Structure formats: structure tokens, C-alpha cells
Length: 520
View 1 (cartoon, rainbow, N blue to C red):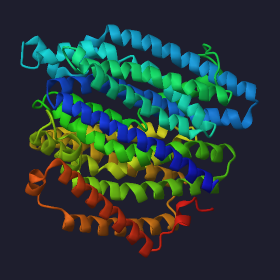
View 2 (spheres, one colour; view 1 turned 90 degrees about the vertical axis):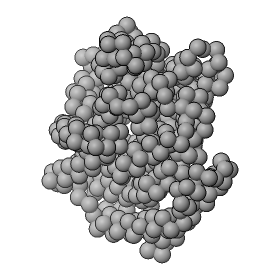
View 3 (spheres, rainbow, N blue to C red; view 1 turned 135 degrees about the vertical axis):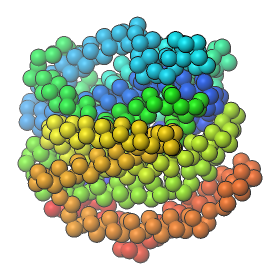
């Protein structure tokens, strides 16, 4: 089991790496095409609403509720009943999503007014951002159907993950990035507003992802004709688990959307600065945090169904050690290299040095919460795998309120940086209370193996960070470098940091065998 978890994590991470790299290429194209001005703000806004709902419902609440129930059916019931559950879940989810999408397309001006109130107020008063409201209302009609496609993609991916087929689901986002890049490069000139090409890329990218997964579902025998099953036993179980889960693992996404809402009142470019810094944060979060939590959820669900408490604790230990092993150096590296990374990736075309510097500030703030974001993904699975979605919602509400308080305190002195820092602080609270609750319940407590590993990880990461600060050129030198010089220098620093971190781990006694699940 330990080797299988590690192998599955490596496969998922490898596929996610390809997707994230292409995602960065997509953002480079977008930054060059639109910069950090009106078009960029509006497209990011119009894309963020369906993506927020996708993470909240499809990847957050739905996946965390569906996988444990599907695992239980698969482990304890005949195969025909498992296939019937899949058919009724897909039919019910698909119908609800279709109706939601139709409503949102019709009501897009209302949605934009709700989530981009600053632009709406300007539109009412013929202010400078009035055009943003009109453009966003039009563009949201194109991007919102992505929610329908990608939620069914998430359903398909959850099924494939439960059947142990992680590669196809992890590779699927690659197709979205390919379609968006193709739309931007090949069709932007055909629109009066280039952002429309990106919007259509989102639409067709969702459709392509869904079609890609169908053959893999057929191969495992899970491609079923959808049926309406609102009152089906399994569907009811999932519905009941989903309601509180909406505020569980997806609290960080709600906080990011609140950031967008408040940023609409700040100076032009604020939404884009937060977006581009968040994109760099999402790279290690998706590559490591989401990958590890996705892989351990089916295993934790099996441990719970089969009542193997020792196996449950060992899997949780492994998940926490792995996210810390990868998350701690990632966070310190992003903090140290924030501006150079943004220069190399985005500072060209319409994305200038000022936009780079502003994005770097919010990236540093976000990076302070990177480890917390990763730990939330793992710790939340400790609840969801046991079909306990009520406890995370209580914690989620508290931390969401705390985030709003932090926002109001920090937005005035720090503007968009304050919003990013507030999100990081609330994530730290969320992670702490999730662990503390698991500990109080007697469900899970950090073992000596975890504490020992964490001490070695933090020492190694500290040595890595110290070396980075020593080797780092002065800020003015980065501005004077050519683009090739920046790439070479950044590659050298990342390579040196990775080598120092790995060497430090080896000296401290970390070996490959420690990366497998420790037997209880």
C-alpha cells in the first residue's frame, strides 16, 4: 500500500506538473496580450466566478462527499449497485448544473453587480470603470458554461481516482491550457477585445476535457447512462454530506473571491496583481498539496470503511510529512524569489516593471500561507474520508469571519497586499483548528515520526533560504539584466536551492524509504 500511494502521488504530480507549466505559459501569453489593465481585470473576473464555483462544488464539496460514498459502495456492495450510483449521481448533478448554467447566463449582469460591486457602482454613476461592468457582464455569458463541463470532469475524475486511475484525471487540465493558448495566439486578432478569445478558449477547453475522460470511464466500466436520482439512497447521502462541505475544504477559495470583491474598489490593476501572484502560489499547491490530498482520500476512506485505525493514522502521517517536505521549501523559495520569478514569467509586453513589483508584494504575502493551504487539503480529508463534513464547516465559518476581519484591518494600510496577507493568516487558523479538532476527537495525533521529520525539514529549509539570500543579486541588478540573463540567473538560484535542500536532508538522515507510509 505504501509503495502504491507514493507511485500514485508521483503520477499525479507529474501530470499536474505538465498542466501547471502550460498554465504558466498560458498566463505568460495572457500577460503579454493584455498586461494588467482593464481587459486583464475583466477576463480574470469573468473566469474566476465559474472557477470559484467549480472549486467550491466540484473539486471541493462534491468530490469530498462523493469519493467516500463511492468507496463505501465499491467496497461493500455488488458492482451493479455501484454502477447505478454513478448513473444517478451523474444524472442528478448534470441536471442541476445545466439549470444553474442557464440561469447564470441569463442573470450575468446581476452576478457581476454582486461580485464586482465597485464596477457596478461606477456604471451607475458613469464612472471610469463603467466599461468594466458591461464587458464583464458580456464575457461571463461565455465563461460560465465552463462550470457545467468542468464539474462533470471533476465527477469523472473522482470516479477514476476511486478506481485507482490517477493519471488521466491529472492530465486533463493540460487540455484546457492548450485550448486557451491556442485561442489566444490564433484568434485574439479576430476580436475587437482580445479577452473574448480567451473567454471562448475557456468554454471549449471545458468541453474538450469532458470528452477526453469518457473513454477512460468506459475502460473501467463506469461510463453509465445518466439517470435522475434525487431521492436515491447514495445520492441523498452525498447531498447531506455536501451541504456542510461547501464551507469546509473550500474556505480558502471563498476568501480569494472576497479578495476579488474588495480589490474591485482598489486602484486599477489590483485584481490582476492578486491573480498573477496567486497563479504562482497555485503551482506548488496543485503540484504537491492537491495531488497528495487527492491520492490519500480514497485510501483514508478504505481505512475508515475497513476500520483499520492504524492504517488511517499512518496515511495521515505520510500526507502531512509529504506536504511539509515539499511545501516548506516552496514557500521560502517563493518569498525569496518572488520578483525575479514574476520578471522572468510575465514582465514583457503590457506587463511592466510596476505591475511586476506590485504582484511580487502580494506573492510574498500569499506565500506565508502556502504551507497552511497544503495542510488544509490533507487535514480536511481526515474528516471527509469518515463522512464527517459538519466539523470542517464550523471551523470554516470561524476562519472566514476572521479573514474578513483581517481584510478590513489590513486593506487600508497595505491595499492589495493586505488582502493577500489576510488570506494567509486565516488559512493558518483553519489548518490549526482542523488538526486540533482531530486531536481532541482522538481521531489523529501527530506521531514522533512526524515531529522528527518536521524538525529535519525546517532545518534543511532554513539552510536553503539562508543560501538563497546570500546568493541573491541586488534588486537593481535584476532590472539591468537582459531576459536571457534573468532566466539563467533564476535557474541557477533554483537549482542551487534545490541542491542545498536535498543535501541538507541527506545529512540530517532523510532517506527515500522515509517517503513511504510508515507501518503503524
